[in-house]
Image (tube, rainbow, N blue to C red; front, side, top):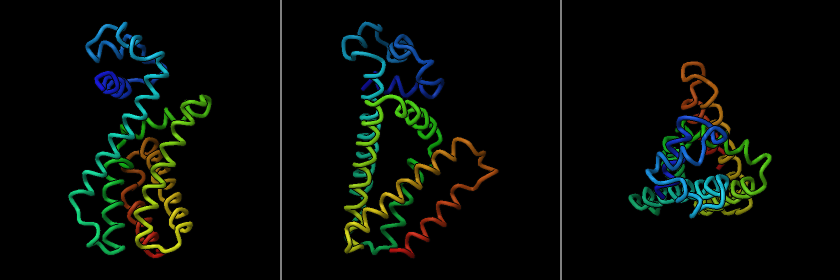
Length: 185
């Protein structure tokens, strides 16, 4: 965990390619030999980092949902809650978005990273589909809406790394998308 948090800190400062094993070890406060003991390569650290991020956000959303009685929420209330969490914790998190833009690029050429991302997005879509199925009797339709929502959120996350906050009001776009999803459902 300490090493994965160290990689996260390093990625806040420079790209994965520019980050060395020694950089990660220094930030983690360990000898770089320790990294070689636990991880086969820098790529192995990255793959474990992706798992770490997935678990962290999965735990956050489950903890957050645990504070809500979602059985009492109607469709609108549930969609508003889900959008608020995803928008504020993930989509509008520019640091996380910047890191994942780079991971997506790595995944284009690296099969192990691509498979890890595919697994991550598939799990996210399945989980969202299971929540939406409470309001949408057609599970295939719920899955298609989930795919659309995840794709849209990720596209907006990409935009958040490219556009200045003043030039594109991403929060407004997210709000309008949320309204359209409610109309569709």
